[in-house]
Image 1: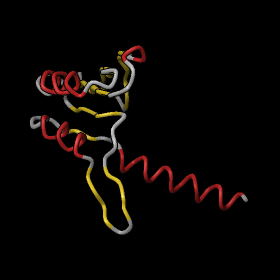
Image 2: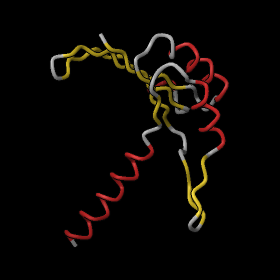
Image 3: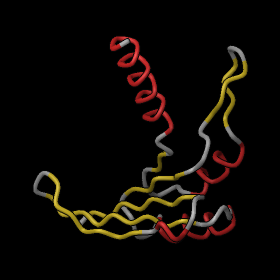
Image 4: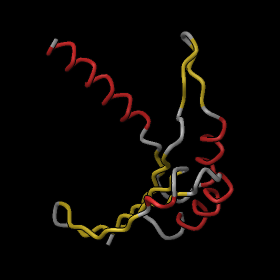
Length: 110
């Protein structure tokens, strides 16, 4: 069984754990909130990199733009460097793509 863990800087009262099948494979998916604590996030990242197959980092800014310059968020960069054994993503690029699709869809509809 593959394990995917989402570690979020969001509220811990939104945590969940599910087991599911996808394309014939079994997965365990969990979300762990840290209530805004980056120290707790670091502890969870260190623990779960030894137990999970992939980690998602949530409620963080991947990067931002000032004019034509793209800057990486310092906290996100620091948290991302903690994980060295498994793939880690913030999902920020996917969010950018979904936002662009939403704007294009709205433009076509209007």
